[in-house]
Amino acid sequence: MHASHILALGALGLAAGLFTPAPAHAEFPEATLYPGLHGGANGVLREWDFGINARERGLRADTSFYGMGGLRLGYQVNPRLAVELGGSFLPFSSVENEGDTALEYDLDALYHVLEGDWAPYVLGGVGGYHLVSGDLTADFDPTVHLAVGLRGLVLPWMAVRVEVRDVMSDGFNQVSNNLEMRGGLDFFLAGKPDRDKDGFSDEEDRCPDRPGVESAQGCPDADGDGVGDLTDACPDLAGNPDLDGCPDEDNDGIPDKDDACPHRPGPQKTDGCPDTDGDGVIDKNDACPDVPGKIGLKGCPDQDDDGIADGDDACPQRPGPQCTKGCPDRDGDGVADDEDKCPDVTGLKQFQGCVPDAVKKFTGAIKGITFETGKANIRKTSYNTLDKAVAVMAQFPELKLAIEGHTDDRGDDAFNMKLSDDRANAVRDYLVNKGVDPARLKAQGFGETKPTAANKTATGRAENRRIEFTIIGE
Image: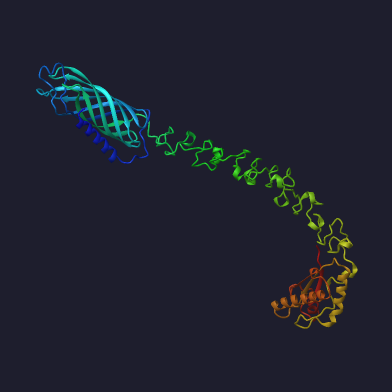
């Protein structure tokens, strides 16, 4: 090969490397067949001994450039290496004739110098020129050729390419050189770019830049549970695909990270903990785990709905207060009806629910407690009665009293309500000052709202102005 040709090829290769865009992420497919077509020009740069006895007859191929075109079939071995078989139609002229025709055959290996969807390449191969018509007479010359070029994957299934090749054949005195400039297209029949080389085309790969597995649609799956790391809520622990890749040791449908009892199956409503009786109280907190009950009673039943679990209820089928262990107490004195000698009267426990005579004197309207007119000041004439009340409270320490104040209907309603309340509290304060525990006393005024007589007469009004003591139950 002439030195100028070598320099020209080298310069073209250098230019291809310098001016090629930086490789993109996409790559050429692999294990893929592709047909191609090309066209360009073929020029005889050095005398070409083509034809039978052409030299003896004073003939030779004309040193000039001629158009050419052809087809090829290639196989893309991997994104950088391909092999090709091609043929070209080459019309040319001898020094005395313009009607000569030759066919060119090529068997080439092509290698991308850089990776990416635009890649400069080098090519080398063998072949032959086959003279089929013209005055040079039929001949076949074997060839060896080298080329540099640029190939671009413009579509996933198509690449464009340009190249310059030097075809070396036999000449008159030494090896001849034909310079070919070609441009063409390659059409990939199968396979698509796969830049992370995980076997999934970039079009179908959810993670085209990271090798992955089929179960994760081409994405990596570090824990191997079939859920790609991008969507795996537990990427380092093999888990259930239906639970975003998180493990569920007890198989209750709740991932272990959200399961309050990860080793024992349970429903969603109890955060994955077992609830044998289905009452919403998990077994470990359920005092009655085998019988449905109420959440407020630690999962135990309460047949009479009195707020006391049946196991603690002395009367589980009849509602009652806590102080009588769940048994009825209709007068509210803390003595169950079954044991109350006076079940309809609020009494004292130590008297089996009845009221002793000494206490009866201080229930209802209390005679002898009076106040200054229109005021809450207790008259001194009332002290004797109140001191007796103090003595009764001391004698019966379990006794609790409600002190109620009432007025007649004369005057403003709001004034009467306040006056009655002040008078009730004045009585309470007197008893407290005499040593009665304030927790045993409750005071409230009712104004003129609860008359016991008609307010039309002075007698009736006097009766309505009163202080009442009522026994308070439990």
